[in-house]
Image (cartoon, rainbow, N blue to C red):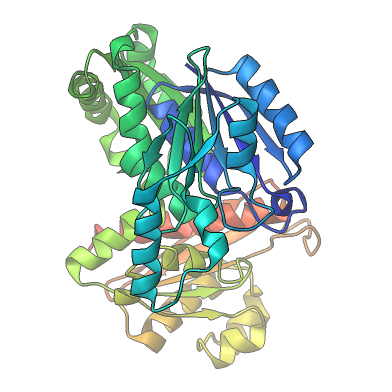
Length: 414
């Protein structure tokens, strides 16, 4: 089934809001076997929204809209879908009652314009939204296509999609079978090496299929199976995953959409260990990635963005003679930074990063992309040198990913 995601909202076109809903919808739909082939964005304009709906419904079987279901005059998605499909809007007494209860629990009075959210296209399916005031809505066209309308806020998109829309789609298209994907995340290995190791499985693949690609400093292996039921597809994926793990298990750190920071956090939390970071060229990116994980305050005790030599010396205790003799970008200084931050915060692990992210500042001996990462424990300190050839932002990202990876490896030594 071909899917188009139609994002609505002038704020998206102006760049005032970053669209995080599309990546979520795309990966979940593709994992379930729905082909997301188009994405478009349109502002809050009746004529342009109607035109975008017309284009989408001519080339896709399922059109999913995000945004435009609020109480204001600018929220017109539902009205334009109803107009395009020539369907009247009818008051849902059920949703109106739910709105009343929602505002009552908030201790506020529902305003008149909120009642706009209780009007639903005739014959539509209403999806419950427990985290907002706009319901999700699905309506079928006379040609048998489906338009699904989701609220705008990302947390509402994810909640309504996961709890109601995906079960609805699986039920609607159950006769076509179920496609399901399993994603394996690998670290410390090159894409070409993974392809070589799994050459036999890839050469003889049929159902499931195996796809390998590099993404944000890691390697991702996607296993996709088709079955008559979800359980059958999952069983097929599990059998192929077992074969892959037999060859690559030491490189696999997580599954599905688990991040490296999440995987590290789980290990730290399970062992009641703690971590601290000293970052120079990454400017706190590693710490930010760690704190993206809910509950990270249980194991991240503190961080220092030691961008200057003064901070490295006075805060982390890096020896002045080390800075003078070896320079800030060196294995010696990286080692002392990691040991210094571990002692400063009294943590199980101390992680440090120092390097040249560019685009300037490099020399023949120490070019842009030279980065040293160190991880210290009470037992030992490991330092590695990396030479990245990429943009400033990519060098920072890869450095942070290597730091998280090295921290996971160090845990195995404890």
